[in-house]
Image (tube, rainbow, N blue to C red):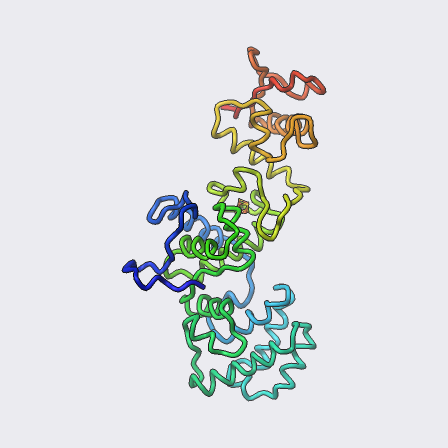
Length: 341
Ligand code: SF4
């Protein structure tokens, strides 16, 4: 996590953006406000209901974070519930036999047993060094055994709403695609801090991680998941969905709906486009004669025309026509497409 610049008198602790960081989202802009509101609204309308998201007990949050480090979230749920039933407080865990905690860890296949030992030790520290009361800041939390910068910040955010912007692999992927953030740790920190509303780390970090988890995964589900950032997203606009952890263009099997959405969105910005003008705006790898070429795009616009969303005309023609009637006809390049009024 990045510390605020001590030389700045700005009460907003977000580090300054460097040239090229999120140029479309300057501080104080309507766009930045809109990006923030859209994500929080999307998250609050519907999100995966993990039980640790319903508590602000720092001990319960810490247990969930440690368990999630190596285990899929769905599998963490029963282990987390059983752990807290067995040892509901730091006092209970500190009083437990360390061997029992390690045995629990193994039984639930939660990864390295050292994490169980560290958790037991951290509970002991809270009881003995902090009088049973958790520290609240990311820096103080890192004094606890086994708690690094990421976990310390997560507990500060989710238990005390006092964290910095989370930057993990999922968040990097989202920021890279959405705001064309360079693949550089300092840039990710700057942009993540910049877009997080000040003092909102609890909801924001949950929301941005949810976005990376359910919408902007390695294969993005922009339209299916109703991603709230499509309007601003660089990847959605360009069709280049590569990311630091997704170095080659992900496959889009079953994402015809996404492509349909992109056709409609693109045509919303232009009066009229030919297929070869529309194609590269829908897919970066569009090539007239290629797999994703005129034939493919014709099928897409034909469906949309059938659905009454598009009008398809011959360039220089005097009326609408069914683009599907030009199968194999090289003249299809002269087809003009626009949104139906
Ligand atoms: S529009 Fe798609 S690529 Fe962009 S942030 Fe949303 S899910 Fe990710």
